[in-house]
Image 1 (cartoon, chains in turn blue, brown):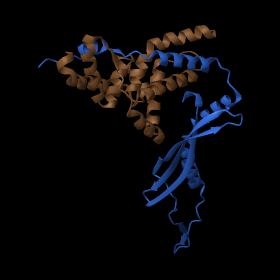
Image 2 (cartoon, rainbow over the protein chains, first blue to last red):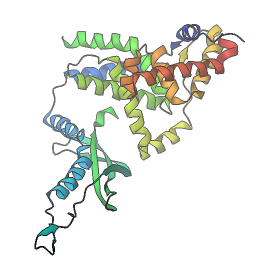
Image 3 (cartoon, helix red, strand yellow):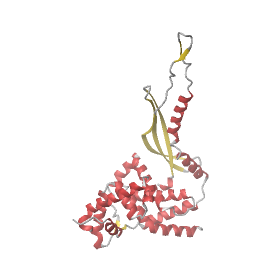
Image 4 (cartoon, rainbow over the protein chains, first blue to last red):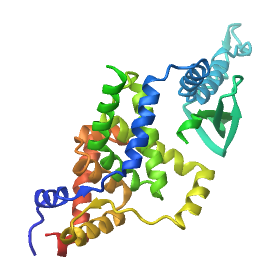
Length: 165
Length: 167
């Protein structure tokens, strides 16, 4: 059995050239690239771009839910501690009932996905890719055996340029 | 740069690289039309991110093709469309070949399509796109060491699948 020589195989594979791109395809992309580079942005396109920018921050949604839950736990003011009077007249405090999350799980599940077509106020058509998500945050306090679970629905709407379809 | 020289530069750049982008996209799309759409969208998106109206870096285009292919696969409506389109779409040859080389080209295409996608994409980007392991790692969102080990394993598998004819 001959020894496997990766370099020889690489050399043989490199002899094969990827199939040429169809001329019509190259022309179409060249034209689209030229239009994209030299067509001044309309107001609607600018609005579209800024909306896309905000869409890139969609990961903030589940993180914000988690932060809100954590902040509400931190801001929670514990009840006055019960005190026990000893025989000599002094008092001692009972242990504080503070919740400490030692495990936080953040998850998102895709519930539905569909496309819709709409028009901007100036009549420009836009395709909207809509996705329904369910964000879930679970906090565990294993010392106290407490689990807090919070789910919230989220609709993600991503505009897709009509002219690239 | 004026409009006509920019267009000439785009044309040269596409003549050099479009076939390699399409090779990568054909492995991820179910039809030739989908592969072409995927490449066109990825090029325009990567160019817009660059913001100068010039051809974007190659690794950025491959990364965008990879990401968009995943998005497309998730979309229910596209899946239905592809299944309908697949009925009357003739499979596209992945490689150019002379009559003598045709048998070997068919063998390599067949072996590549049987290779698990995680190995196939790394082998394609290394051999035919000419990217470094660092660029492949960026494009696919994996560590460079993983890219290198997937490449080695992919070559070994490819060697097993093509052993008798290629070497």
